[in-house]
Image (cartoon, rainbow, N blue to C red):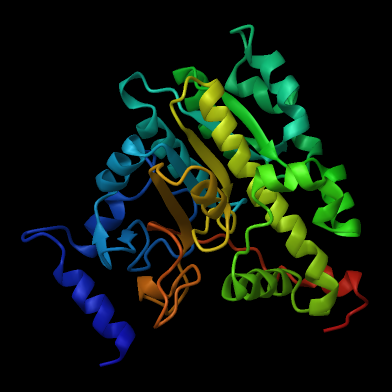
Length: 335
């Protein structure tokens, strides 16, 4: 039996006696209204939750309890997967149980839009339905606001502070052109950008950018983007810390791409440097892959290194075709 098969068999043995079948386990990990996507919905992992630390499947209720207790919660998505946003909304509701009011930090809005967020919501008349239009979501380049709306609905219903979390575009351009030094020594120190991620994490970050550009740009050309990515992660961490304080010290929940919530090189590293005693929970929502049923080999995990999250939550996948086709045209068909 292969190592992957042994892991899966061992994990299945950890299910409670008289517990759920795979189909039953899938149902427990779907959003309240069921999965929207259908491709991969019958996969043996779809709707299941994997605890990385315990190398075991766990009920969704365990994750809800964990996020309700943690000061900082990071919910990593694939941006255009509606099921990921429905599950984020479910966990955000759990984080706000008992009257707790964690700040909701959004990667989708840059920090310089915070005034617009507050202006719309401060009157008490702002609605989740109108939030997208008020913030110009349709012109932002992000996927349809309708799939993000469940998250905002929970925030508005529970009266949670909403925080624009990402680095403004102009600042990203400046760092890409001039390096992190363009930020000045004081800001670099405040964001902890001088702290080294380490050679392994640096390599993974560059590999991720290389793969994200479909291997069509030389690695050396992508090196400036490493500084930009680090700035974005550090800024999101700063938004979580400051948002949690201004929201009454009740912590923060980050809604962001799964790469940002990685514990080995993303936002959690900066939280650990700045708030070392804070409880942090990182959940990666991942799409199932045909023919791959070993949960430990998803989301950056290998036979020797576990995935860099506390929990993996498996969902059906979205059919996107070949995401590299557009880049091939842009680069003149070069591979």
